[in-house]
Image 1: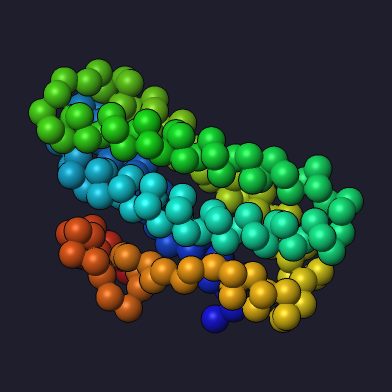
Image 2 (image 1 turned 90 degrees about the vertical axis):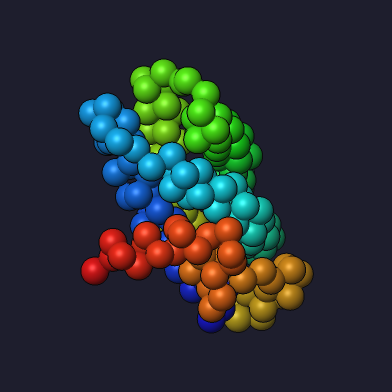
Length: 181
């Protein structure tokens, strides 16, 4: 699988996880029983795989795109900047969910607002990448470019969707398996 295929696959996986987040946020909104451990697992994954593996991969693709066509700089640089914002929003929401999971009282409205803000920002961000960045990369980057980007990365298997599910994500993986299809 080349790097662009990996990035697209990652987006599919993130979309599944955003659906889980939204479902749990719907429970928060209706003051129904909410699985905060599940929310914490999803947000831990989001802040440890997409934020630390996927986004750096995209940043390298963007660098290579700008080398190939400097005119796309104004389109591409905001995407890199959004990666930092996503990291901050994700960490903030994870910290909030962790406090709730640990028994601290946090207003439902605050949980829902932070969660929905994160989900919406990430969906909008991925849409830009899917609609603008990835098509440009497909058009402008050669197989050699993509291989050079891949060679500079420390490849790390996806801890939930990869061949081996990391122990801390086994419950999240089981939830996904039970609720898919």
